[in-house]
Structures are given as structure tokens and as C-alpha cells.
Image (cartoon, rainbow, N blue to C red):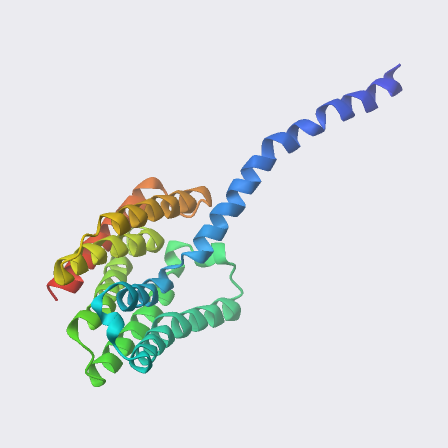
Length: 226
């Protein structure tokens, strides 16, 4: 009787763990995908694309816009991501290990240097102030996040979404347009991204909120006042 009962117990209890963990696994994978797609490095490039598409700057020559986008892509996406990837491989760190507060200073430094190079290049090409303001605001945000990281692991993902909101408000003031539609979309994106960072256990709610308001502050100050 004991031999016949053991298989029955196993077959009865085996499906339960799968039912409990499958939704959690799917949610975790979705959060990972969202975090990977909406990386902070995309912020300046996406901001320039929106600027060239939905403002009067769309009348600029295509060649001019492609040159500006090429400069922004090289200095804000290609160089920082490539340098951080090489550093990660040299040290043999996983993405989770790289996300530890003590190891984030070098990625911050590499990103800040790339942004400084972008500001200098844009200055040498005599690009308008309102274009360089995007990079200056992003650079300011990275510097503040790096300083905060000395004591607190702030979320750069939600800092970038906060900058999108702050930048949108700033450019709506400069170009005099109604930002309500885009503002709702950016706030929804910020909430989704913040939730994803909590789900993948990279940040707490306070770190996510701190990142968002830091980015919001930099988006307004960097574009309107610096």
C-alpha cells in the first residue's frame, strides 16, 4: 500500500508549483524586456527624434537632421554602451552584479565623459542652444545621480523618464504647444518603467520615485535655465 500511495502523492502535488510560479516568471520576463528596451541611453536620441518630428524643426534639411542624430547616437548610445559592455566583460560581471551600487561609479563616469564629448562636439558645430540643452540636462542628471549613488542607489531608468516629462514641459513653454497628450503618455511610461525596475528587484519604490523627480528637476533646469 505504501508503494502505491507515493506516486499518487507526487502526481497530485507536482502541478501546484508550476501554476504558482508561471505567472510570476512571465511578469518578471516582461519587466526585464521593458527595462532593456527603455534604457536610459535612449533618452537624448529619442528626444531629438521627437524634436525633429513634432516641432517646426521638421522643416530643417534632412542632411542636417541626420548629422545631428548621428552625433547624438555616437556619443550618447554607442560609446557609453560599448565602453560599459567591455568593462563588464573584462571584469566578468553579470548585469545584476554590475547594477550593485558600489560598481556603478565607473559606468557613470564613462557615460558622463561621453556626454561631455557630445556637448563639446555640438558646440564646435554651433548647434542651437535649445538642442544642446537636451544633452546638458542629461549630463546634469547623470552627475547628480552619480553623486547620490555615493549613499543611495537611485534609479537612472526612472530618472530618464522623469527627464522626458521635464523636457516636454520645458519645450512646450519654448515652442508654445499643448503637451497634454504627450504628457499623459510619458507619465504612463514612467509608471510602467518604475514598476518594471521594482519587479526585477533592481530598485525599491523610494529609489524609483527619487530617480523620477531627479530627472524631472534636471529636465526643467537643464533646458530652461542652464
